[in-house]
Image (cartoon, rainbow, N blue to C red; front, side, top):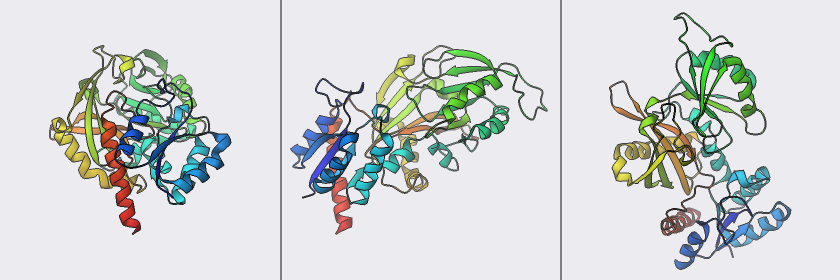
Length: 348
């Protein structure tokens, strides 16, 4: 009988509680059971992949992935198993390709023809592309380079010229001095452009390597606005204001940012605009069902009419935690059950 909801975890990692699970996993399992929906946790093990696949295919109606890719040595094999489960009729929360599509930094490039992302946002998948385009991109103002891997601001660089260039400059010489600030801890480094670009090649090399290049938005100093979403429902808003230091632009706790939790109603213009554009977002990112638990981070900008605009800086749906608000497990359980009902109706 395919009746269970299976939560996938992986042993070890820094995101585990004393009982070996993520702190927010068992509250969701318990909330489902309280509502009459059977659920269990399975730890992914590459040595038992086939056995896990057969068990879940036989017994589960849906899975919920609670694995941080940074804690997973066999990510490709895990995603392959999830695809096979979805192909076999198990409801993916989320589908592995949605996990990749929403979580990869080049989602911004796919959305750049919406009002969510500036048109001059680019992705570099090869070193040759990067070397050819970035010196010209930087000519038009301060830029932010974002690696596809990493977290907590690692490999996210604000890049600006130290000195102004002549007005007729067509491409920036590689010996030009630049100021580079990393979001991880807001530390500043000075380099020649060519040397810094050579350093950044590491972000492009290897599986899923890429660099996203987008304009720096000065109003980041007013704070980054993170929407926590349950599928198409905004749950709360985290306002993350960078430290007061002149060079600070990182919105992570590690870098000294201050967090404030607001209700979605407090950010009605942003929330309403984003919800209206969700159909475009889902279509441009592959047409998959919205992830169960995901986030969208925005930065304030100013439009041509002098009005506030909200620019999407990043999305995440691989394993969004809510360990500081465990009461949300009740809402998640309710959303899972609603999702199961929708799929059942479609199947009928």
